[in-house]
Image (tube, rainbow, N blue to C red):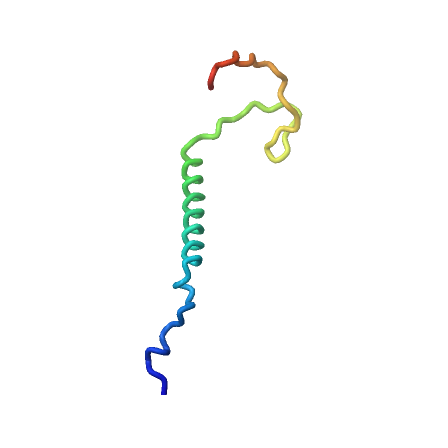
Amino acid sequence: MQPHADRAAPHGAWYRQPIAWLGVLVFAASIAGCIWIIAVGQRHADVPVATPAHGTVFGVPTSTLPKTTVPAPPGSSL
Protein backbone atom coordinates (compact mmCIF):
# COMPACT_ATOMS: atom_id res chain seq x y z
CA MET A 1 0.00 0.00 0.00
CA GLN A 2 1.32 3.49 -0.95
CA PRO A 3 1.54 6.27 1.63
CA HIS A 4 -0.99 9.11 1.38
CA ALA A 5 1.76 11.66 0.61
CA ASP A 6 2.55 9.95 -2.71
CA ARG A 7 -0.98 10.58 -3.98
CA ALA A 8 -0.60 14.36 -3.63
CA ALA A 9 -0.67 16.67 -6.67
CA PRO A 10 2.20 16.00 -9.04
CA HIS A 11 5.04 18.53 -9.26
CA GLY A 12 4.06 19.32 -12.85
CA ALA A 13 0.57 20.63 -12.06
CA TRP A 14 -0.49 23.63 -14.14
CA TYR A 15 -0.76 25.97 -11.16
CA ARG A 16 2.92 25.35 -10.33
CA GLN A 17 4.10 26.51 -13.75
CA PRO A 18 5.24 30.15 -13.81
CA ILE A 19 4.60 30.45 -17.55
CA ALA A 20 0.92 29.64 -16.95
CA TRP A 21 0.65 32.46 -14.43
CA LEU A 22 2.46 34.80 -16.81
CA GLY A 23 -0.09 33.91 -19.50
CA VAL A 24 -2.97 34.58 -17.10
CA LEU A 25 -1.40 37.91 -16.14
CA VAL A 26 -0.92 39.02 -19.76
CA PHE A 27 -4.46 37.97 -20.64
CA ALA A 28 -5.94 39.86 -17.68
CA ALA A 29 -3.89 42.96 -18.52
CA SER A 30 -5.05 42.91 -22.15
CA ILE A 31 -8.72 42.60 -21.11
CA ALA A 32 -8.27 45.47 -18.62
CA GLY A 33 -6.65 47.56 -21.38
CA CYS A 34 -9.55 46.90 -23.74
CA ILE A 35 -12.07 47.93 -21.08
CA TRP A 36 -10.04 51.08 -20.36
CA ILE A 37 -9.87 52.05 -24.06
CA ILE A 38 -13.64 51.57 -24.42
CA ALA A 39 -14.32 53.67 -21.30
CA VAL A 40 -12.06 56.50 -22.50
CA GLY A 41 -13.62 56.35 -25.97
CA GLN A 42 -17.11 56.72 -24.51
CA ARG A 43 -16.07 59.81 -22.55
CA HIS A 44 -14.76 61.77 -25.54
CA ALA A 45 -17.03 62.74 -28.40
CA ASP A 46 -16.09 61.88 -31.96
CA VAL A 47 -16.09 65.17 -33.84
CA PRO A 48 -17.76 64.92 -37.25
CA VAL A 49 -15.49 65.54 -40.21
CA ALA A 50 -16.57 67.27 -43.41
CA THR A 51 -16.81 64.70 -46.20
CA PRO A 52 -16.96 65.23 -49.94
CA ALA A 53 -20.29 65.01 -51.72
CA HIS A 54 -19.13 61.92 -53.64
CA GLY A 55 -20.16 59.57 -50.85
CA THR A 56 -18.67 57.15 -48.43
CA VAL A 57 -18.05 53.44 -48.11
CA PHE A 58 -18.52 52.17 -44.54
CA GLY A 59 -18.16 55.77 -43.33
CA VAL A 60 -14.84 56.33 -45.14
CA PRO A 61 -14.81 59.09 -47.78
CA THR A 62 -14.25 57.80 -51.32
CA SER A 63 -12.25 60.88 -52.36
CA THR A 64 -10.17 63.59 -50.70
CA LEU A 65 -11.34 67.05 -49.80
CA PRO A 66 -10.06 69.99 -51.87
CA LYS A 67 -7.21 71.92 -50.24
CA THR A 68 -8.94 75.01 -48.85
CA THR A 69 -7.06 75.35 -45.59
CA VAL A 70 -3.94 77.43 -45.11
CA PRO A 71 -0.97 75.30 -44.01
CA ALA A 72 0.52 76.04 -40.61
CA PRO A 73 3.72 78.07 -40.64
CA PRO A 74 6.94 76.06 -40.17
CA GLY A 75 8.03 75.64 -36.58
CA SER A 76 4.56 75.95 -35.09
CA SER A 77 3.31 73.13 -32.88
CA LEU A 78 -0.21 71.80 -32.67
